[in-house]
Length: 289
Ligand SMILES: O=C(O)CCC(=O)C(=O)O
Ligand SMILES: [Fe+2]
Image (tube, rainbow, N blue to C red):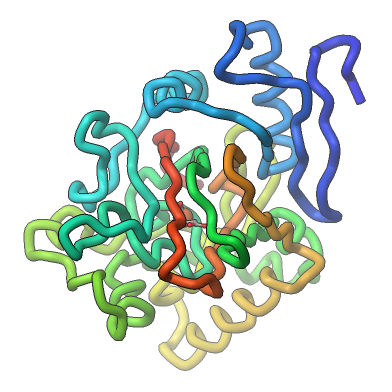
């Protein structure tokens, strides 16, 4: 597809989202001429996969900055020492402590949905991958929205939800070692925020569900019992198999996903004695509306 005009080939990977971009060596010659096609593929397919890349942290930062200004994560201890714009997702330990975010994202979420300005694009580039397992799943929140009935769309369109980083700690991290509770200073940086339950993508104009099991605490306009059941329905709805692309990692893969139209979840089925080490950047997004 399009190989003649743009120099890249786009191959769809799943029914609802995901495409592989072929014929691009991001560490090699300048890719400025193909950047518009790459960015369009990111918008169209919501998750793009580039295999066989070997980017240094600086090269990953340079590429990410073409999408927009970068943002740092609230957990500063997982930023790379030599390059604080790069976060480590890693189970590798040094002196008994993980050097990067361990157990990161092992629940459905959209990155930093608990911030006023949630992440636009996330970049994840694998350096070490276990011999089996450790996949990442993505679901299309635009397709999931499209398939709802019109009365349900109208109902959800008038609602807002509270997102809170501590929700992930209360529900997922509480029983895990190596992810100590947030400090008071960290908590102060992530007060609960309110976002619409349905957001409109600022670039494509598509509507998407914007709630996730990791960070969404409640729907504000509903009673507690109503909120719980509506959220559970939405979480179940949008994570059905036909909305999912599941990525099986090889070393050198670079994934770029649009957090405005997708959620993702790391699959925790690998042998923790094997190293899983990835470098990560995030592009700052706008206020959802
Ligand atoms: O480790 C993974 O597969 C994904 C972790 C995650 O949620 C992220 O990098 O945003
Ligand atoms: Fe994530």
